[in-house]
Image (cartoon, rainbow, N blue to C red):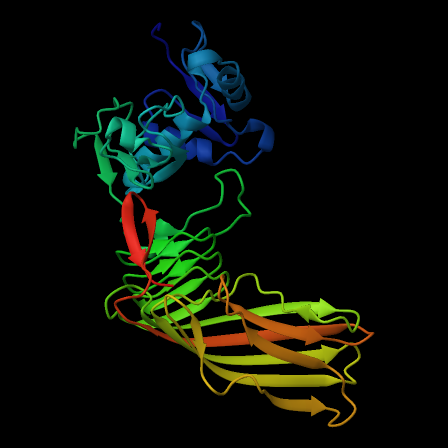
Length: 378
């Protein structure tokens, strides 16, 4: 660039040759007229022969720059980061990418970071896993993540509650939590199932295991267990519900999503509560059964009580809603509640609580989770 003397007239301030850069900057900051203000692009050479520039002329030169000389947002950001104390170390999230195979990791500046995603660790054996933070410590650095002077990798825990919140599909942001398994060894195999504590297995969809050593295949069931005798599921309390609507007086079996299948070697103390309500509320009725059931290899055994229900009714008389309980004594051994409604709409809800204990001759079932075979009693 040629040598020359510059005198810039900036509004009410006159700047002459020899003024320090700080003085020039302060003078530029005093410009208040919108048309005279500088825009954020780059100013390079001043044409030869110019000895005095007004503010509009400076703006015109800056706005005329194109290509590599233009001041883009990345350059502006870098100027800001470098000029404000502490800002040069600020983190700037750039997105979620496969850091081992990404064309989007460009214009890297110190403090830029990405969250690793979609990395096939099984195939490639990478040390960085999905969810880890990868932070650049220098500008325009190469992708050598083992160089700790250029990159900082912050590993995120994989065995916590946050790491096991899974979505049904990567593309369905509305699908929500798929399953939760807290602590190990646990297995949440049913869709939207939850296992807390230790040593539990939830196979039924939307089922919940609490405590230690519980197991269920029943959809929507909740299991409470304080530990096992020999196997998962041999000492627990299982709760679940069923519901349906009738519109006539034809007897129909209660609609369970799934129900207890009585297994050999296990005893079940059942408490069953059924409630019905007619549309409009003129008639309501409840039934409660308590039933003891035990299963051997050859037969299903029942206690003396339990078929006759304790009944309550609104109104007390003249209510023809009815229900009966039966235990199916042939394979598959399970539970039946037959409900008889009215000619009008009736809603039904049943709650089943089963206190269960098994001995060593109980049927042991198996399921595979993440390559591990898990045994349980249902």
